[in-house]
Length: 164
Image (tube, rainbow, N blue to C red):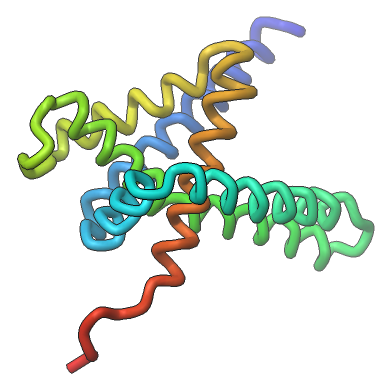
C-alpha cells in the first residue's frame, strides 16, 4: 500500500463520518416529532429496538449483499438500494439516539435541544464507532440495530389525530 492509498482510505472514512454526522443531525433538526418518537421508543424499549433492528438488519444486509454479488445488473442495483433503504430507515432512530445522548450530555432532561447539543451528540456517537475492534464490532452494530429498530417503529406508528 502506498501513501496515496492510505490517504484515499483516510478520506473515505472522513467523508463517510461527515456524511453520517450531517444526516443524523439534519434528520434530528428537520423532523423533531419523529425523532422524539424514536427517542421515546429507545428509552422505553431498548431491548426490543435492538432485537427488531438486528433481525431486520441482518436479514436485509445479507439479502442485499447476496443481491449485489449476483450477475444481472438489475439485481446488483436492487441490492444496493436495499442496503441504502435500511440506512435511510435507521436515520430517524439514530437521531433519537443522538437526542438521548444530547440530553444526558447537557444534564438537563427538560431543555430544548439546540443545533450545538445535537451536533455534539451525533459526533460522539460516530466517533465512538471508530474505536478499533470495540467500536467496529460492538458499538457500531448495537447503535445501528437500535437505530434501525427505532426507525422501523417510528415508520409503523399511526397518526394520533386525523388529517385536516
